[in-house]
Amino acid sequence: MLSKIKPFAVEQWMDKYETTAQNNIAETCVASLSLKDLQNLSENKDDDIYLSSTKLTYGPIRGSERLRSNLANLYSSKKPFQAENILISSGAIAANMTVFYGLIEKGDHVICHYPTYQQLYEIPRSLGAEVDYWRAQEGKKWQLDIEELRSLVRPNTKMIILNNPHNPTGSIISKTTLDALIDVAEEHDLIIHSDEVYRPLFHSISPGSPDFPPSIISLPYAKTIAVGSLSKAYSLAGIRVGWIASRSSDIIEACAQARDYTTISVSQVDDQIAAFALSPSCIHALLHRNIQLAKRNLEALEKFVESHRWACEWIKPVAGTTAFIKFSIMGSEADDVAFCEALMDQTGVMLVPGSKCFGDGIDYKGYVRFGFCCETTVLEEGLEKLDKFMKTGYKKISLAEEQI
Image (cartoon, rainbow, N blue to C red):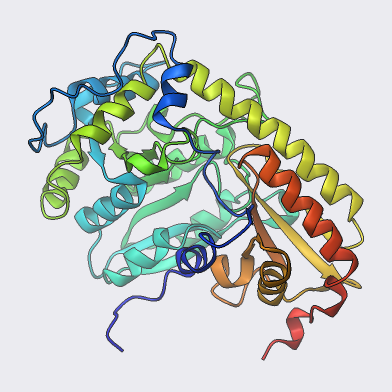
């Protein structure tokens, strides 16, 4: 075996099917934009997305001042946040990798929100850390239990890893839970790392709700890290721009030191496009477009679930772009892998099997992840095909307990 790390199940699944799917309703990005689309969203039609006169040097190593300042504004609603406390990366996946490479070592113990994006626990494990899962409870709307967290903390625990809003369930970690989490971290001097790539796509909860979650770095504890991206909530996966933000200068410098070995800088073209998208003249229209699309598409998905209650159950998502739906046959979990494979082969509709991609092949059997923020026509056509499959091919799907 040449690789020292387990296969990245969800990314390999996406790579296998996403370019040939007729209706990709597994995609986690809000329907992507072109540069022309982005320009049309801006209030300032004369503002250049990219200056063609720019010399294509490496550019500012940590990211341009304009981009980092625009990002700092996102975290400054209650307390000013400084641009120098942000590092630009090649997407959130590189940001997460940089944090773990810079801060985690053999002998450390980390506690990771579960289920979640496999990178968040597999990379720390590959670096020699011991990993425990802090399991979201499906019977409690995918919420986390603070007392369970307390029981997981060890003398060598270094970091708690979160995903908020949450992939694959579309749930959030509430403000109350985050406040209690800060108390635990402060008591044990722990770092909190929060992957917030689906922020600020809050389509089913208002900022006035007492449960509405602030960014982790907006809370009164310095040893917090937020990772973000232009890919998911901002519809710009093709420019490969993400970031690391922390109020701790020590954490930022440790990450910058690790980043020197992997990144140098991001593309100046990508940096300028990202800065344009996050500028005051563009960001509000961009987010309005995406939140409205999420609301519209979620209504369509909810209608599908409600009309197939004989086979489906879910906790309706409140944020992000994903839903985790459980499929059963006569009360027993369906084989989610066989279901997704048959659906793709027979209809061209792509979904993601939960047990394979989020449960290490053991947990979440019968669950399927939907990515519902694609173009509305793509979703509606996909759901129509899925409806027909449920009337014909679904009865041929085996039960999860029959898997060999």
